[in-house]
Length: 495
Image 1 (cartoon, one colour):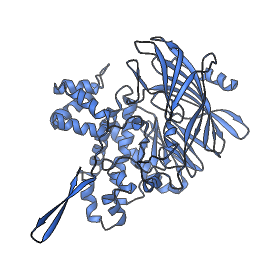
Image 2 (image 1 turned 135 degrees about the vertical axis):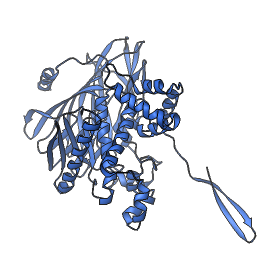
Image 3 (image 1 turned 60 degrees about the vertical axis):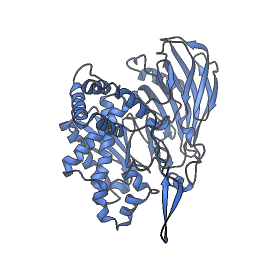
Image 4 (image 1 turned 180 degrees about the vertical axis):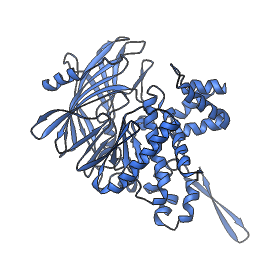
């Protein structure tokens, strides 16, 4: 450990802004137990107006400790193809900078730390947390399956947003500064939010150092026996890590990514990253999802049906452009980047394939194919979830953006804003916002909406949409029977 601490002191370059939380993480991965064991030093700045006597930690992996009774066994089998496998995060100790134990209490995913001496306004505290994270054997954004471990984020204890002197579990995670030392077997490959830098070799284990600034969370992927495709497009390096069996699909995917990069550069503006990293993941609810500086691609991409390629590309472009917009707008609300990415992805597909067509209209003539029939009509199969994400809620709310408080995505909020303001006013607001991004400092999207529409109700509406994702209950409450001559008609009444 002293060696790593010395390396850490050398790796810390410019000072971090005072309001950013800092995580210095030292962790070792045991691939036989599928566990991460280590410690982290957390530096937190009290930006609130009052002294702070309590710190809150989120233990995200504890959501996988046990089954959710509201989810059926049949649906669980999609995420757990072998058998239910509990994960979890255990905190073994929490100490202050002097080494004194800090009192804490746990409510499954929420840990509260009581401070003997409150943190004064504009004050800073540094404390250490020792933890063990057990990965569940499951598909998705968090867990391991076969030769692949996917950890979109939350694999270590982290702080929720701190706004106006209070811990806000419903708000998106703030940008933080991460410095990570990660040790694992030398035959394993580490893919992360930052390019791993080898700092130590000890026997059969190697240690890498990684760093990320202004990231909401730090993403990881641990793989075996992978190859990578490496291409350069107009100053952007695209690196795609995939399995050898996906060689042909990988070439098709990389070609599509090159087109998306060209489109973004020509139609939207400079790409805010110089290196784009992608890796396979066993996703069961979508074809692609974005991590921090990292894009996870389903190993099923381009394998389901060749006529659906345009819809595969729409899903990939949406997440790719979301990654670009999030890098471009680090201090903007995430739903704005999501909404812009959705608009740009649709424009990309229209640019490449012509007039936009509804998926239902495209597929119904092909409904005699079993896979098409599943996509169109089955509520229980993953293909419908992939192609109609608004039709059914995700089985497990894995995404760290939505975990603490499920909400509407940016695309849905943009759709509601268009209805509320009218198509012309909304389109003008988006154009004004894009042009305003060239200004320094630029206005937020909320201020642009207010300026263009002169509608004071916009803010409360957006806050309401962000508070909670609506749940539609379409179960049958009771049946009504009516008699018409010699026939009895039955009508199902929906709640």
